[in-house]
Image 1 (cartoon, helix red, strand yellow):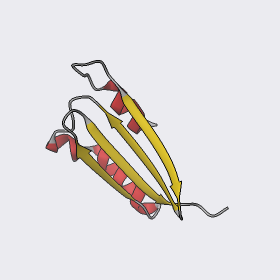
Image 2: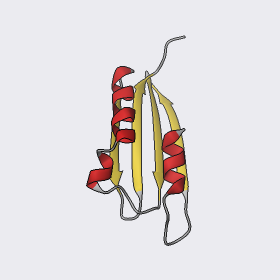
Image 3: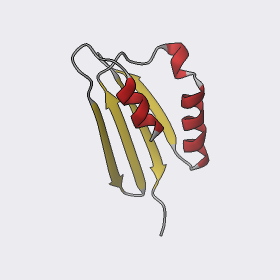
Image 4: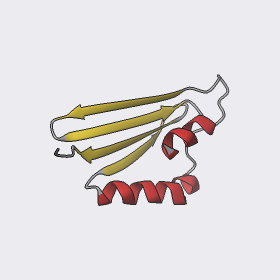
Length: 84
């Protein structure tokens, strides 16, 4: 939820847009959140929120990656699919 809140709070020259996609594949859940805001400056990518999200995904056996796009940012979380 924090990831969506952060993405929606970033200003954009063209009007803000946030996209969230969740995929369930063979044994994996992938959540991708992207926006068309200002991107993530290097010092911001090392902030507390990013570190907490990265550590949480690692504790759950997953990974977190972020990419600056031509306009905006994309964060991808990959987690093992929980067994029910």
